[in-house]
Length: 446
Image 1 (cartoon, one colour):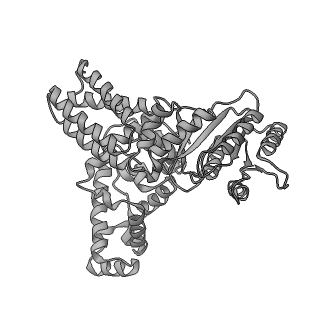
Image 2 (tube, rainbow, N blue to C red):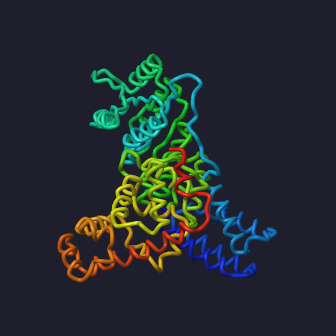
Image 3 (cartoon, rainbow, N blue to C red):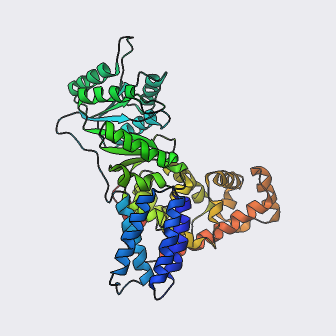
């Protein structure tokens, strides 16, 4: 997510922060590069122009804070403006006073609308809500069956009609009646899409909207389509009227132009993002956190939230103790890989760790990806119990045996061993730094 834009901005602003004193020319040069980076990331031209103008205005009129260098002050303004164009603050689901809260999900075919409906249902259910989905997409062959199957996988009920006389309008009305009767808290209505926006699609959506009077109308858009997604969002909003947007395939969009343009261009907040194919790879959209990720500052809050789902307080305390005592072994590394894979893609998690880019000279971050982790796991699993506990005993013959057993080379085994040593040193150093966010405190609520 935002890899290309983040890399360029981190470089530009990093150079700026190294300067002890800034001139107007320094700022102009930096902002010119920021503008080009945003345009290359497919950010809307008008949004980019206004963004640069606001940052320049703040920088020129700023009284620099005593605790910050001039460069850091510029970065502060850039981060704040990124947060603003992304929406400012998190936009929550508007909950009805009476059950059910009805969420109508709309969009074109191919955006992942039906899958997103089930992800949203799972997300709401994880917050201890009762949820039901309604299969109102009777246009696309297999759409009802797909939603029904997704519901079974997540153990979430799906209201559907199999009669040939069923219409999306009737299904939506009956689903609402059923949800009211069963006192279900959230009803999520999956509607039909088309390959393009047309009058028939809009009339069907208007009819359902008028019948069930949804509390939320969320438009699902494919982030990888860039400005096409922004244009679709504008057309849907002008015709139907919506309350928010869900951007899918954010994990595949290295540029991020759609997300950065959406709020200003469409006038609606991004409420959720899809970051992978798995059911739980779906999260609320936090503008301030995303702004930090874009500028390479990490996203500790989201990382902690994801980690809390995988670690108990006891496990976290045990891991913290091992790190402090320099007892972190290959077995522990293997266990962390398992937990990391449950939390999301490796590249996504790395982007949430503040300052990790500064360790690039010691640990090759390019080697840390999902495919590489599979090889690392194979290498560790080919080691004996003693070798995992104490990698220092691994000599030439042991390396050859491990390489043969894992389908890798001795050089790759040696590379892992060297990187593990560096990792132990870094973890030891970081654990010794005084921080209120120790693992035991972070997970104290579990």
